Length: 581
Ligand code: ASP
Image (tube, rainbow, N blue to C red; front, side):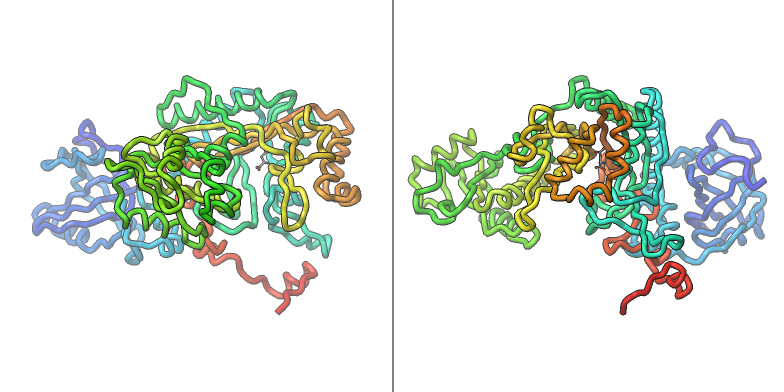
């Protein structure tokens, strides 16, 4: 037997017991006649105590232990003289009588402590060492806990967890597919699922009624802090439901998680906002509601007065930063530098300050004090406030001002990660127009149904058609989304036509789904959540990699196993593939 107890288990009540522990050497301290070793495992740290007088040979052996050696120690539990109140086992120590090195270890490339000196790259290359760190491990305890809670909740609501295949045909969720060549069908490829969308709809046709799955999905996109090429979704689908049923079920799940993980009660229903309102008030479809700073347009008041930047703009829009009128020139210049960075690409900001001396703007040359007063009024501005105004093409300006709003929120400490503001964004447009290709794209995906009262406009005025599609947004992060689906062949065919598919293309790609619709498909709808993102949010972090055991880096590489990698000539030949260059 390697051990009788874990390193996190022993307390004062165990004093006098003889026990055996096994774990990793966190640290050894040599104090002349005494040596102390902190022994660590997943469950905690226990102090091992050695004494030159008591047992010279054993004490000398302890002094030779290096960091991260794997050891087994037997001894008696004793009350400690100097107690450590920071750890659960801090009142006791083990007076060691037997010590065995189970394995030695090279000196790790970074410190295995809460704070490490290892940079990201090193941590990922030696992820198995990084995962030994207690604060990293806690992320996985949180993840595990949330997965259990999701399963328990949905299971109690009569959902069945069903696995869907990983080698499939493309499902469009707006990204590129990862493809897998088929050896038995040369020249043909599987796609890895961007989501189980079509399969879960088929499970509804199958009469499963309520399906869910914690499922890996794959999207070949450029990576960011909150994106990985493979990620996990909580995917669910329900038959015989309208939007309201899905929202209330999912809201129940979210509230359950808030309660179980953070002890937070939300007695009120989550706030709802239409897509149109979100765009008008925050310039984005996932507003962070932890703070105000709503957008207000100023075009009607500010255009046509001879200030070219405004006159030429499609949109003039601003936000009011409470209490920032006292900001120095250096501080406001820093805001301009922020929006001028290439990632944001704005040309500048017009400021209006309301100080003790009254309203003062950076465009006083072009506008009368009375005119500027009308702007201040629109924002409900008070003395002490700072108005930030941007102008340009509508979509771009909305994006840029949204970035500035979030940045100001950060600077002003208004985005506390411990405060949660959930929001449903509803009534999304069904389609969006792509200027470049001149085509309509599905805003969500092509299986989303138009609102029944808008369906007749699908061909004549596609831009005006809304969908029963919804996103759950928490603190400016899109946690998930879904929709009520099309369940009739004819409507699905019309949808594909609007999206520019020929009937043959539609049949080639999605004939199986449309065929299934002809065998009694019930009305259905559902949604999916980014599980990694949700866990990160609950862990008060933005980087989802911290919650994925073996993540990829920004270039899509796993540097630990060194993937992707070449395959050998025989494999290529079997697959009927020749690599160019
Ligand atoms: N399949 C969708 C997605 O992955 C979610 C849904 O519509 O249920 O975003």
